[in-house]
Each structure stands twice: as structure tokens, then as C-alpha cells.
Amino acid sequence: MKAPIYLDHAASTPVYPEAIECMLSYFDEHFANPNSRQHEPGKKAQAGIDRSKEQISELINCSSQDIYFTDSATTSLQKGISFIIDTLRIKGRHILYSATEHAAIIDHIPYWESLGYEFEALTPDKNGIINKEELNSKCRADTVLMILMMINNETGVLHDINEWSQVCHEKGLLLLSDASQALGKLPISMRTSKLDFLVGSSHKMCGPKGAACFVINNESSFIKDFPIADFNSCCHHPTPNVPSIVGMGKASEINNERLEEHLAHAKMLDTYLKKDLRSSFNAGINGAEHSKSPYILNVCLPEMPAQILIESLQNKVAIATGSACSSGQRKGSHVLKAMGFDAEHIAHSIRISTGFETNSDNLLKALDLIKQVKGVTV
Image (tube, rainbow, N blue to C red):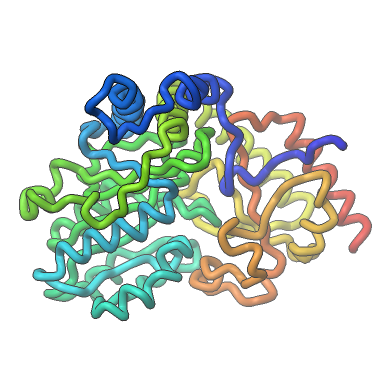
């Protein structure tokens, strides 16, 4: 059976062949535990991790010492936030976050609140943009942290982290950003933006699953105020997944080299997609068109229930209604709900996300197949 045309890259991406090649020797030749650095095999394994840190640091313009590896973005977010708020609890326990954050954060809030922390959501406007005035109105003397996704995983809405870092720092807040949909796809500079904390995922940028990063900017006031704070102290210490970490590093290196080329290609595909879907389906774009990633397009098709479309295309085109972490639960999108859309609108909305290997021919074929479903159901 021919593989479906894959347009769900916001959920996961294929691994670069070069990254796979780099990983192979860490399954046999350099298989040792990197925590066993009293002997040469352990040092060789650790060298692979150190090289990956260097490759990622070049991609996001930070020190390699700022980077900590985990097994997933979910772990990085949950452990990272726990580490930050536990360290900052002597200053305050009030945390602000975007209502459109990933479920990995929102679903974990009851746990943090059971520990005595207070989380308060900032609601986006109809375009998915968080208003800085709302931050000003909800910020209190005991507010210590703002959590804001760089690129929303469902709508592709982009927040300018440079601006948000400045606004947060003026208020005395630290800023954490989930950059899983931005890492390797858009330019990021920890040094320029002054972003305090960043989370990135390997398998969202053509690296392998099983590796992610939590980054603490060594120029952040957090480091100056709490110099002995150690992220590793809040984590268990399993043996690092060296092959996946090495693969993430190689994917970072490749993306750094091809960033402009990939971005131009994504913009071209995004422009064509929006034009065709509007003319063929009277589609409405969910999210701010003036501030979004070209890799993610969330649209409402008024004449086409999303679930019927996805099921009809099951073996032909891979698209989604939203986050892979929640789509299996058949819940309405919390992101679109937060933006003010009703259940009917949400039920007709789909997410199409392109990748580095998506080409125009496959995109045209996918659109033709979607139109065929429309012809059957309308």
C-alpha cells in the first residue's frame, strides 16, 4: 500500500538520514554509559552528548553549558517549570501562562496548584495573540514567571519572544517559552532575545524521538539570583539516551545550515495552501496571518466536518484536527476554544503542517484528494 501524503509535521517529522547515520555508532561502538566517565568508553559516549550541546548552542545562540537533555518536551516543560517555581517560591508563587499552551502544561497545573502555587491564564484575542496589556493587569507583586509558547502547535500563531522578554523583565518576571515548533525552523537567539528558559524537541525538527532540551540562559537574572540552583536536582538521573541526543545534535546542525532555504520553501507552500483552500472551500484561517509560522496552517472548512474529512482520507493524506497529544481523546481544541470559537467552528477545523521534505506535487495531490471528499459529502 502506498504511504499517505504526510501533512502532520507539527506532530512528528521524519529523521534526517544524516542524523540516523551519526546515531548508529552509539548503538554498538560507543554504547557505554556516559555517566561512567572513569574509563575511556564512557568518555567517548559523553563526548557525543557534548558535541550535541555544541550543535544546539550554535542553532539557538547560547552557551553549550546552558543545555540540559531530557527524553521529551513534556518532561522538559513539567520538570523545568517545577524546578523554576520551586527555586522562586521565596519570591512568590503566582505564575501567568497563555491559555493556548500545550496540554503538557495545562493538564499539569492541578498538580502544581496542589503544592500551593497559583496559576492564572492570559486569554488570547480572536487571532490567538496574547495581549501584553492583560499581562500588565494580571501581574502582581508575587508573580514570578510567565509561560508563553513561541509558536502555537495547533494554529502556528507566533509571539515575538524578543518583545515579550523585554516586557516580562520590566515587570520583574522570568519568561519560559516552549519552542518545540520553532526550533530548527525559525531563527532563535537566546543571547539577543534575553529569553530566560527555552524548551525544544528533537522529533519536531527531523531528529529522533527520545530527546529534548531544557535551556537556561546563563545571562538570565535567574542565574545571578540563584547561582547554585541545579536543574538536574529536580530530575531523576536515568542513563542518557545517547543515540537520540546525538541525532538531535546532528539535526540541529543540518537545520542551522538550511534554515533560510527551508523557511523560504515553507512560505511558498503556505501561500499556495491558503489561496487554494479559500477559493475551493471558502476556508477561514484560524490565527493571526500577520504573525504565524508558515509550517502550520489551521483552517475552518464550513462545508466539511473535520472528522469526516480525516477519516475519509485515512490512507491517502495524513492531517489532523489539532495536537497529537490530545487528538486521540476526541476533545474539542482548547486552543480554538480559548480564541473564542464555538463548537461548530471547531468541529470544521483542521491543521495542515508541512515539513522540510514536503513538495509542491504532493501538496497538489493532497488538495485534490480533499476536494474529492468534498464532492462526495456535500
